[in-house]
Image (cartoon, rainbow, N blue to C red):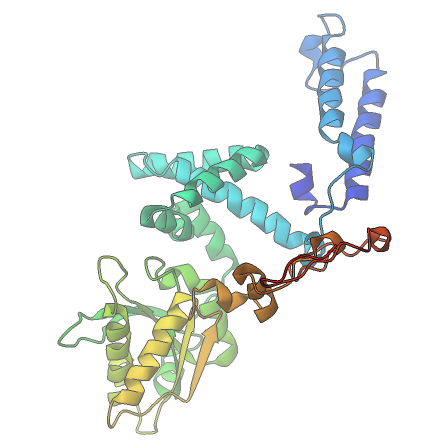
Length: 377
């Protein structure tokens, strides 16, 4: 747990941490009286010293590799900040806790136990990692929805999130986008200003929130949507489109396109804008929402007489889930078997360890080649 609080520290920090813990234990056990909280053990001879010494011994044995400098290399640790590791620790514990309590009924008991289990997993981090690993191996849509919607459905987390998000002058729900093939979608309208400024605004950001196509309403994205409205002074309209698998592809695209079409054809009057000056629209989407936003843009291009948006913003849009979409050509060659694999010299494109100073002392007759050519000795 200390490693996670410190943000996955280096081996030298962990060594100092282990030795410092042993030193503190040594200083405490030299006292004649038990420290605060262990006075009830003082009547039983030196039982508290035995318990504290045994715990410290187990702690040192667990971190003996760090104390002796026998730890395994961690080449990827430097790629991320300590804040990232702290956040990963917290969110892993929250996922494990909420997944553990997801089948509990009624809701108030489930919300309470979710936080209790999350607190347990914050301390028992290995248990949390094991729980998350097992769930991800057989993950279901229900697991995804519980994990991604916990910040909205749990009242405590919802209150904590509300403390950190910007406060806007206007936040309301409207129903937009009815068509022959889709129902109207609930849209959350956000604006940082008065009603007069709202009606006169000429810039609208139509946001399609992400959520793996199966989860997450606009309320799950209020932090950055409110920040957009506050910084750009534009109206942000976030669509709560219908989710799969209840509404399969391309229902979400059709629904979001219907919303855009109504906004464009009414020049924003459907959400309360006034005036004859043309409203400029910006289409935005994150993750799966970026995919849907791209589909909406294609529908706009295919439609006659419908003006396109002034801009499109994709935030880590999910356009290709193939493994080759996030790997370089050299890295995919290793997977496809078309690249030399000189692992003895750490020359593999995927090797993270740098060549050691003893690499040149290997037998010069060893030569690794690719393709169907035989190995030469």
